[in-house]
Length: 238
Image (tube, rainbow, N blue to C red; front, top):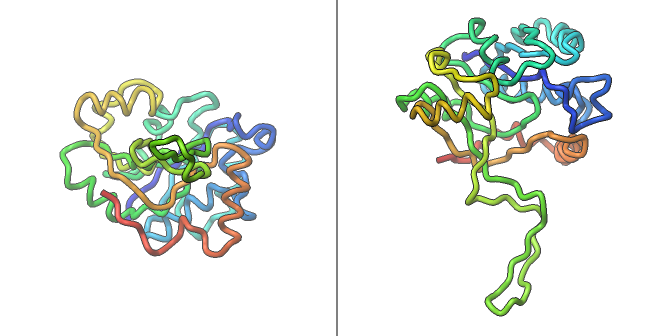
């Protein structure tokens, strides 16, 4: 079993006004906080020790964690109100083992965590991130050579463009190479430039809950049957 750090300290400004009274991590998807869904997808694959890197509305995160007593091992760390993502991870580093998972509290995917861990252990880096095909924010149009429209596609995934989907694995040695406070803008680019960061592609289900509309879309997916992020059939990744 590997420990998992979950970043749940942000203010969720893109989900305003729904985040005035709640941190975004506690906004509901299908009647339960999205954070619980993230934890369930890890626990379903055998990983039930969590460190919650909290900040905004930390008391609400602590109340949420207290209700989980007896289900999983959960520790809440107050990493500060305006702390950036990289520093939040660093502040939790001494509370987790080697290696450890890390992820965002608002991203759901049916990532094969065992395969992700195995990939991480095979390479010589200190960090692995999961890439996913970039979802287009717009519908696209396919044309033939004469300009005739052949197909409309509603917000397709763009497989030629990979983005950071979260679902990280870090060795403790990563902190020897940790540069800056922002995970996405400082830490990961520095690790990449040093040749210590690898990526594993995930082509299965993935969706980030950036806005309240995303929460509604995820709820609709869950209401159609079993939640796709808990699907037992993990799609192959390269």
